Length: 454
Image 1 (cartoon, one colour):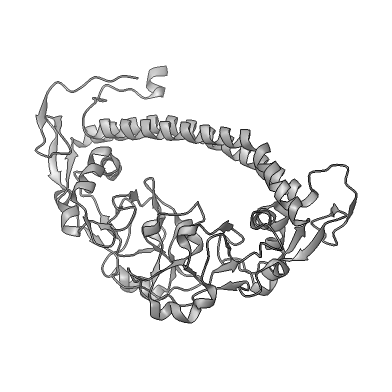
Image 2 (cartoon, one colour):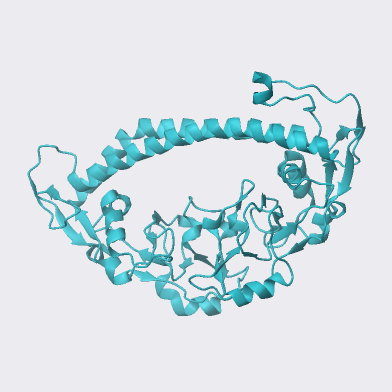
């Protein structure tokens, strides 16, 4: 697909923007807003089990607010107090102004009540700017380069409010903004559909992968082996020479299953990492996004410090039952009270094998059986300790791991290739958005699919 250029261009006067169509205006953000750019409260609220959603940087992704990744819930009283400074409304744009995701943006597309924290800057467009157009511009490569050139560093990257409000954006006529938004909505939707197909294929491959692993860690590799009842309803029969033991029997004697810090207090940029479930729900986040807690608060919880190779499990919240391995770079970190540390004794079991059982359909059935609560499901540590784990001889566990890794090599290769395809499609999407909102292509003569088919 190719598009013409505009007949005439002018120098924008902005290094990272270059030339723009002659008829377009170049304005600082503060000139296109209806209210001054502002941010959320500069205090750490008291989080509660249920209440008003409290949104921070980790919930801002790909132009959207992911409410499943919110920082937590706050009381109605705190929400109303924070709203005296700023109350979110549909069409507002948020920009992350500190941390690993500085410059990431999203637009409010819901009418529900929520509050935001200080890492987010709120931009409310005036009558001359269509919010969706502004969002596209803020997500363009050109603007993101401008953010990078203007941020500063302390212990992490950040960009000041006065810098944000003076960053320049392009502003065509309203009718042209509408055309560009409609064009990008349609073309981006096509790309998104292709991305969705690749993701569905990845899901199917991962389901197959999980089925292979689940069968191997509960039934073994030999289809002719004699079986016996496991004594666990949802586990069924297991190989006759295997044991089924509660999880607590596979743990290092000096490092029992435990949870971590109850009240983290204010973040301490020089403190010890404190891992929360949200830090590994979608793969490990950037280290700069992980909460750091002061030595004073962490010291009483030395019992829950992590070591590389430990397993950790989310025991409270939407991700309850999610389990992963602690990477070596988090050696010495601590955990929050919503996370449990599981230090497997390698003389009794292979940690990979135990994690595979916990992540299998059988392990997740244990989570469903023991988890209590609806709005905020949770696991009691005493129940986690009782999770039934299959226990082949240690050398057989190693053979099973090696066999599975070898068997799944092809599936893992396809998953990687799908991931590469998704990356290329997303790069194409980003390039198209950047070209349209900076006037590098002229879409004024574009007709949507329905108009072309008429």
